[in-house]
Length: 489
Image (cartoon, rainbow, N blue to C red; front, side, top):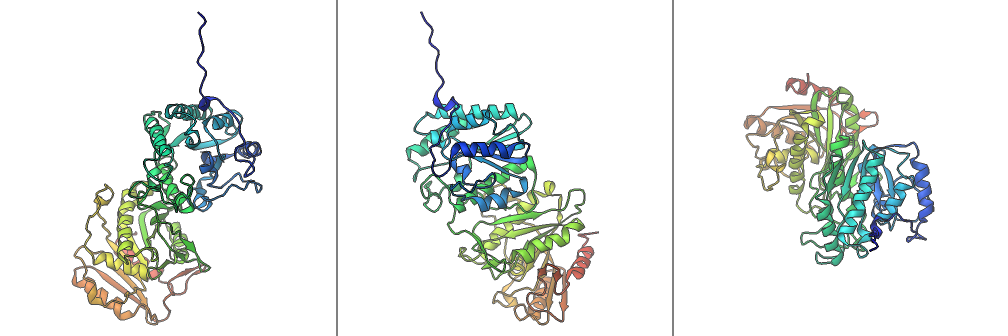
């Protein structure tokens, strides 16, 4: 009897295609990728279909009209890691296999591959067959790059509701992938960041219920960064989402001509860390000002980091939610601040921060936010492990403290409130000297140390860092207070 040989299914047979023409030409993109990757070093390399392709990033051909929806998030979250994008629209597992076997990764020196593939096989292959194709890709990548790690992302949810047939097929594939065990492999199903509370997908997240919007790419990037940091460490200026699993909001933040950040819906911390060998354990957690409706990020965070990092001091900015879209002011911002304190403490070892040397610093509304923190009980309303850690902040610096239209008597200082450094000017019409002095008195009555520094000249923006430093140099008084508090040597 003649023995029949079982033929491999289509998900395992390397093949080419040009299904997305005329949006882009697949053979042309393949050749461009091979040329771009030859001899190139990259910390992270993304491989996948149109969802990966639409991150944007290099290599990029101007004739390629594929939307670069995720480019802003790509640059913000991954830019420090020399990322390479090997996404090709409409790819299936068999097409990625062909690309790997035909030179796309051979010239690379990569530390981590991020693989997202399989959604275009749904409806053509069974979940087991799709799983087989993805495993074949993983194995080929490892064979060519044995020292690299592989972050395997689960097939993203698709279709408007949980009972969608494509959604259920994706879930079946992910259940099979979750069983994979490789020492160099990490599987992560990040699709939950794209879902509403009832499991549906909003049109503002995926208009076609397949391809993410800019806001969705930002949410995905935040989840991916947290996974990459285990292998790549923390990259300076790369945001860490405070609430990566919360429902998405369609409003994306903007930066205006004054470099003010508005419409902050995705709250984050952004670490700016000195070299590990220079770090002295002190960290400044900065709450930028902006009347709770914007964040003066450049003047209050980035330039401050350039001033303090050379002295071994970390600067960590808090991108708390603003109004709009926040509706609970300052409650939403307070929740973000306390989450940020806990997150920094949780990362203290890898960020070379000593928790006892963590200092909150706020400008204007940011200073008011720290004051609200000092006068509001810290109720543990969330059940996750990070939140249970407590938001202990031992010291705070309040610059040009904004009353937020409230008298001193509205702020009842907690017994465990931080010791404080307050700094203001006699000419500031927004942050009156009398208010800072009154808050200092209330702090002292609560048993806290309060040091007040008053400059005779300067308006409400006098402490802002310009390119050449602040108009009124408050830094010497601040450093003297840090030394007095034994936060710096």
